[in-house]
Structure formats: C-alpha cells, structure tokens
Length: 511
Image 1 (cartoon, rainbow, N blue to C red):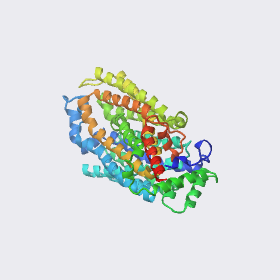
Image 2: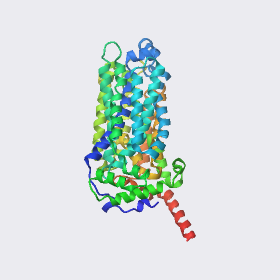
Image 3: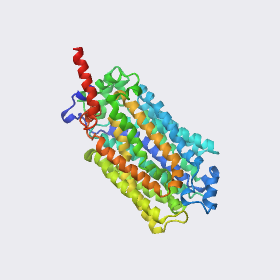
Image 4: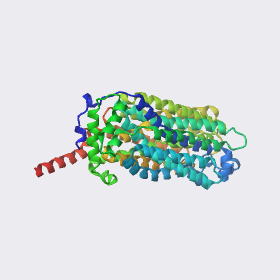
C-alpha cells in the first residue's frame, strides 16, 4: 500500500497542537466508556443486593441464606442470574457488526448517537422492571448501546488525536470505563442502604445520566476528518475541520495522507472479506487475540462479581460493596497514570509491567484461598483485608496495561479501508469472550474453587509472552502510516513482506 509512503512533517509527525476542541471532543466521546463501565459495575452490585435477589432470583437468595451445607464457592451459581449479566454481551456482539456499516457509510457520530439513545432506553426499562423478562430486555437494549458506542468511540478518538497524543487521548475511553465502574460501586453502596428495598432501581436507572451526556455530545461533536473525506467528494470540509482541531492552517501533509487512505478505502467493497487477506493478517490476529486475552486476564470476574466474590470470602453485604468501591478507585487512578505515561514509555512496556503484576497477585490470592478458605465459614478479618489489598494491586496492574491498551492498540493499527470492519471484529470478539466468561464464571467458581485464580494466572503468563514476541511498538506512529510497523517486525515481515514481493514481481512482469 502507498499510504505508508506518504510524506508527513519531520519525524513522521503532523503539524498541530492539542486544541481545546480536540480535548473536549475526546472527553465527550469517552463518556461512551463511562456507560460501559457503569454497566459493568452496577450489574455486579445489584446482583449481591438481597431485595433484588428476592424479587428476581429467589432461589439464589434462599440458597445463600438457608442452605448451610452448600459450598462458599457455589452460593451464587445460577444460570438465570448469569443470563441477566451476560445477555448484554450477546446483544453487544450482534450490534457491533450492525454498527460497522453505519460507521462506515454515515460516519462515527451517528453510531455514537445510536449507542447513547439505545442505552437511554435500556436504563429506563431496567429501572422500571417488574419481572425478569423486562429486566433482561432492558439489558439487551443496553447491549445495543454499548455495542455501537464501543465500535465507534475508540475510532473517533484515534482519528481526532494527533499521533503524539493518541495514546493518552484514547486511554480517556478506558478512564471513562474506570470512572463508570467506580461511580456504579459508590451508587450501589449508597442505594443498598435505602429502606424499602427499591435502591436497586435507582442503581439501574441512573445509567441514563452518562447516556444522556453521550447522546447530546454526539449531536454537538464535530465529525472526524477521516470520516468526512471517506463520505464526501469535497475535501475542503475535512480540511476546515482539520485546521480547527489542529489549531494551524498548515495541515496539508496530514490531509494528503487522509485523501490517499480514503481513495484506497473506496476501492474496497467488502471490508469483512478483505480483512482476511494475507496482507492484513497481523491486524486480524491482534483483533482476535487482544480482546480474548483482555477477558482471560480475569478482570471482568472482579468487575462483575467483586461484591459476590467478597461475600464468598465472608464479608457482609455492605462491606463487600465498600470493597468494590475501593478496587474501583484504585483502577480509575491507575488508568489515569497510564494516560500520562503511555506515549512516553510505549505500549509494550506497560503491557509487560501489568502482566507481571497481575500474574504474581493472582497466584498469591489463589494460594491464600486454597489454604485458608474452605467450603464453609470465611477468612479471618486480617486475611480478608490481605485479599482485598492483593486484588487492588491486581486491578492496578490491569488498569495501566490490558485495560486501556486493549482498546487503544486495536483502534490504531487498522488502515482506513478496513478500519471500521476491524474495530467491529475487535469489539465483537470482546463481547463474545466477555459473554463466555460471564456466563461460565459462577459455575467455574463453584467447580474450580480457588483454582479459578490459577486458571486466569496461567493465561496472563501466556498473553505477556504473546505481547513480548508478537506485538510491535506503535507509539508516535501516524495512524495512516501504521503498516510500516508490521513490515519492520521480525515475525510479521515474513508475512506482509511476501505480499509486497509478490506485488512487485507482478508489476515487473506487467512492465
């Protein structure tokens, strides 16, 4: 492809500065992360509230209170309860593929708008639910909202930001996820104390607040220059927007790259068929492997089921929700740290640090629970706090590595002609593996017991090795020149390099 040969300003960087418009646009778009994080946190909290369980899942409530013979690890094992949590992810999986043609044909803004509106409807339905079917239908609508938002928001942010700021800006999405989880945990801690047993309704309905911000923001935000060029024959509009968001009139080098990338993308009629071609093999592998590894870190186990997990080791309902608040605060703080250093240290360094941190803490937690927590009773107060501290260290490791980078790296590696399709594959894979983990975790906890931490710890070791050997560094590389990192990589150049050699041989024969 010729895109990688386009001339930018010195050092492969484009002209411009971090403008207020870009900052506000990326902050508003990152609200999509807040709605995702809020849902992750809120569902785990309400499923540990007794009034909620009593109304919708009475068999779990009965088993928890009255069955003294059941193992600590099996109290919450209910397929209906996990269906409540995981129904969102099947809806998100399907809607992420529906979002791709919308994002491709109409732009990033319409997809963000649809996501916000669907999430608004789902939060209203969840807060007003009178039976489990209404509850799950609300979850499905939330899934549609999250599917559209997760597909379009990371693309929007990556395309708006300058290469040297792209990492920090895109991690704003994961900062939003962290803030959403933290807000949900704090709200759950407060609403659990409401007398009358209807606090869970407030928890579910308040998801409408970040959804409203995202919906209004989608109306007010400028469209990305990449999308404007892709969907218009007149580049002047894109140039005007580019000048506004870069704070300079000298944007010709970047505009030329965008126009060339767009001209290539318009020759692609079936991007999902195109993405499986050999020259896109590195990006496709990453689009599948990164979301898979992100889920088998075990983080969503902590996020979905933190209150349930803390109750498993013997904490009360209120204490378990407070513990979830603490872990949420740690995760949010660590994500902000990641945003500050990602464009200095690079993606791979953070992946390595976080991977080692998560592996050590998970194995340690597994050992403590294997030795000290039996099928009945609980951990002593001291050991319960030790487990909480270790989980905080684990959450911090995830929050400055696989959390934000699992969204950042896939959003910046695809060429324009397959970018929307590639992001859909990434999001869909994320939802698929999230669904599998969410649907199976409570049953796995019941059968694996403390071994669940060794299971996820083993995967963390595998993914850390994968990143070390197979993921090239992408910091400061302009998004429309990203293909050169694969051509320079020790392994991937044997695949994409062969494609270039074949193309050159064909051109010489034709000459």
